[in-house]
Amino acid sequence: MSKKIIKVVAQVTALADKIAEVQAILQAIVAPTRLETGCLSYQLVRNSGHSAEFLFIEEWVDEPAIDVHFATPHIRDALAKVTPLLAVAPIIKKYESLA
Image (cartoon, rainbow, N blue to C red; front, side):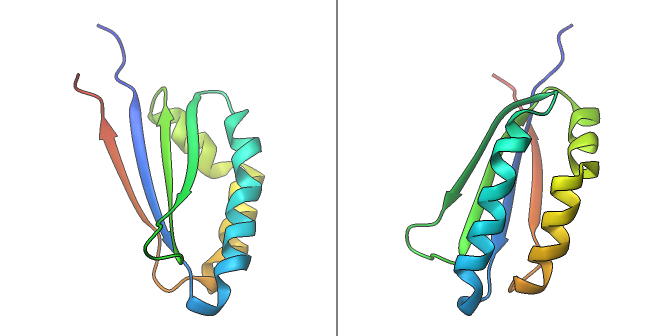
């Protein structure tokens, strides 16, 4: 039986006066994350109707790859920088591909 790809959707909402700073921090982690072992796809998008809301849409080969991702220096550093600039805590949801 083949492994199921793990899809992650992570919502990040910036404080109204910190949107540009949050966007810069988030954009900086895209390139190094795409190079990580186990990362199949990693996209950053912004809600066109609410510019403070960002989404990461991700695909990973398995849970261990996601665990390694969260332990990387670029993610740890980004979380430390971005957390005080957020309106709410990030919302991270994982999904399995069914079809």
